[in-house]
Image 1 (cartoon, rainbow, N blue to C red):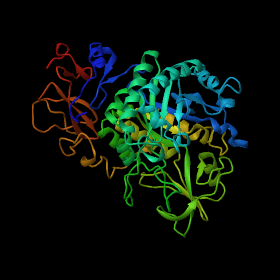
Image 2: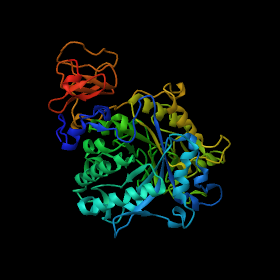
Image 3: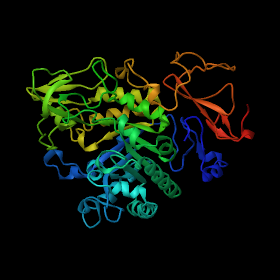
Image 4: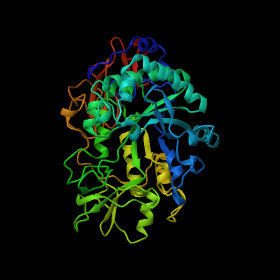
Length: 505
């Protein structure tokens, strides 16, 4: 697909006549709203629930009954898996998930009875299920397997009352379970899935990488954005014990010592410049920390490290601590250090043990970033890692309640002020399309006459004053120029490409 033109498949050209069903949402494609309309005054809060938390001991055990529906708009059950023989979706833990055991699938979807408008989705994949096998690659490469998967998936979702499917293949065309052809095959798979799920009023979302090299290898972003309802950015695990230095795993902005693009702001900006509508992007926020064992007396990141930190008493995984374990550690001798620039969350250390994490203040900063950039909302991994049972005396779900509160209001807390970014937009050489001008002053008014230089007044979709068949997507002050499909004109009232008879231009 050209970076400046939109090509419509035949079915979409037909559907285009049904203008109320369509909405152009800030990128070089037309998006079928389908199963979920979005309002800019509302933000989604997507909460992952990991079913294996049931098997944790003591205060770490988390069941479906522990989910607080008040802090989420969308719940994702993690995970179903892909059967390597049939290439169909199956339960991962049949005793937990199915009616022959605890029937957690139905308990999970029945949570909708507690909150009007709550959506429950089934996640497919995850890190473990994506590794060591080409089963996902084989699925998306075969039209026959794709068709069989889709038919079965619809029945599976409806049988248990799910409102949609969340794809979590980590990652197409990358690591030990992918091939180069996955990039286009995955886009085709998503298209076919959405065309089948949409008429059934089922949502389709996907968790995606925040690393540039993985994005470039595996995601045909304009086409994915055309068919996904939401795109969940996994903006965490930028750093971990696989490295030889202790560092925060989910910085928001670029820091002075950073030599890579491993921070949330870059990931969000890069997905937009590659063709994703900002109002489909959901920013990932971790409810856990990555831990290290220090190898020197240095504690400020990046600090030399010899390996992962000790396993927590509840989560029992080296290199990883839940927030409930972290807040407990802070009461037991750990020294906490906060970043006064607001570019990353705090870190804490005790002797050789080191952990970086997000606290309620950093969650609020990220919520404000979501508002500032016009993103769809926030996503968390995972509900069962917050201090859900008030072990630390700050109330149940301190991180989730802060996120939910901040995203429910268009006026973020003053304590969540975000510093001036040091690298707001990826290099134009790495982005599609390229900006038409240098970064302008965001306070400049939109021109009302035809000029050679367009100046953005802020974020959003705006008409091209020189050509009714073109429009701009302004993102963080930079205008990206797009063409409507042949024969259509930009309707600025409706914010999409429309028939000329509906446009005054």
